[in-house]
Amino acid sequence: MEYRYLGSSGLQVSALSFGAWVTFGTQMGEDVAHECMQAAHDAGVNFFDNAEVYAGGVAETIMGSIIRKAGWKRSDLVISTKVFWGGKGPNDRGLSRKHVIEGTDAALARLQLDYVDLIYAHRPDPETPIEETVRAMNFLIDQGKAFYWGTSEWSAEQITEAYGIARSEHLIPPTMEQSQYNMFHRERVEREYARLYREIGLGTTIWSPLASGILTGKYEKGMPEGTRFSVPDYEWLRENIESEQGQQNIDKARRLRPLAEKLGCTLAQLALAWCLKNDNVSTVITGASKPQQVVENMKALDVAHKLDSDVMEQIEAILDNKPEPEASFR
Image (cartoon, rainbow, N blue to C red; front, side):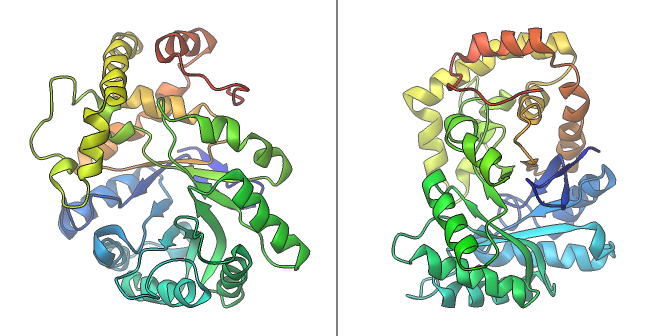
């Protein structure tokens, strides 16, 4: 396993990580989840991602139980969770000081942990002053309930404002951003955040590297049964796939397949390896509903070494969506 620093911090995270989104508590129970986490851990994964909203908190409960039963050394793990959608009450959602602190306490109880390594503001909250959120996150770190805090799907302007408030008030600024990033979703990570990597040392823990499964090739012949699209509250994923843009992306994935075969890898491994080539990606969060999928995903590290400039140019010719200015690739 390769380990990368989380932005300009001294924390190292595995280049490939494992997340509980969609699968834990919805597509699989604790036994299979344990097998998947064990496969990831055996491969050297140290970063495991979660959120209070995943399966209504059940995903955190499952992950916490697995960590306790596995007996893994806590200092070898980097565990994250995210707060924003914690329930239906008026103060159970958003980024108020009340919900940030209470939501984190509830997440720690479900995870059976004294602290998480990373805590995220899961989305920007237009109803809460950014300073209030910054101070709440700083409090969590001062209390030892989290070691680093960051954002998820915040704009560069919002992150910059949070960073500026923290610096001016002698508080701890955000360390990382968790943003969607894949071959079809590039603008924010490659262009919008470009100056933040240089100016504040922003780290990134990217999600959906396989574009909700498009980059596995499983939708080339239509919608298969038993996918995440049958999971309640994820109908929007089906709409994305069935949209005109989604169909265009499926066609591009189909055209990428021969290149993957030439490299001796799967389409999914190629897509993960492509994400790994971005110097500004701290870790690529993978997901799986079967342990064998975890094993196959981990092989993307070897594929990344095969993506020389010639191969990257062939990929870009198919994608035809490179933002300007482009990110720095190895």
